[in-house]
Length: 131
Image 1 (cartoon, rainbow, N blue to C red):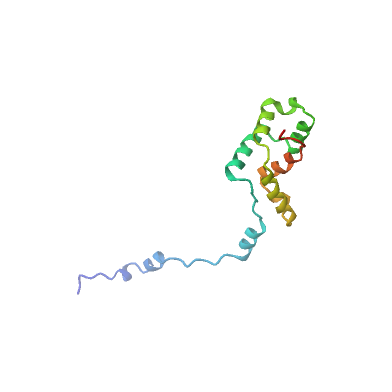
Image 2: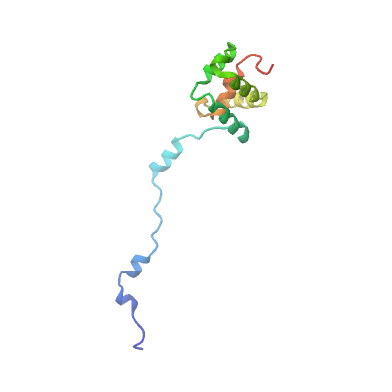
């Protein structure tokens, strides 16, 4: 039949251009890089963790050790009255500290802990903070 057109003859590279490329296997170095980067460990309830991080933003980049020192020395000027109030609103729970202590006792690394977890550890060292 003359009415049929041989598309393959007109466009010889068409099949190759439209062919789906086979997926390339992932390189071993890419997989090793993903495994080498450890994930951050979070144990504080997510909503509370977020609120703690928001509260900590008011202290800027002040290290936890400076915050704890100001609380221990009752230095309101160093953290401000609103900072004191915020710290009182987010006093670490005993259960949070217990989970983090268990993680560390089982060989967990401190540097893997999230910001809220590090806050819990630091501020838990303040004696009689809840009172």
